Image 1 (tube, rainbow, N blue to C red):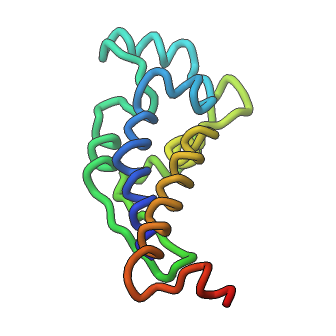
Image 2 (cartoon, rainbow, N blue to C red):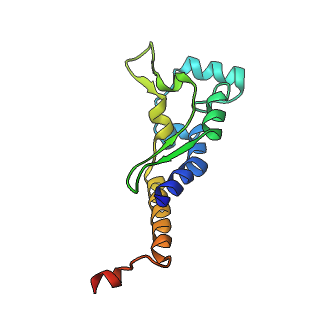
Length: 140
């Protein structure tokens, strides 16, 4: 259970922030935004960071979280976000839609490996604690 908790905390503290940087469009292969939207956003706000307009969504997701670890195999990271994050935004100019929830939780291979290493490290540390059965003892 501790391994899942630390892995989810690592994702929230180290990986989530990357989803709000301009490089996230290519890094996570986000759906391209309409040219007119990008132009308007750059003119009004001076940036084109994905999933950020007023900054409210980013602030809420980065600040609020609740970990719900039910067992050694099941855990949830619950974050508070504005309702629009759960809606799929259909673009008028094409059939593609923007799935913000999927964009926020997208992972690339390197990040998956970091999460796996975090889990392995924590589980390894727990197994080394006094009172835990080691692999050698199991084989006897």
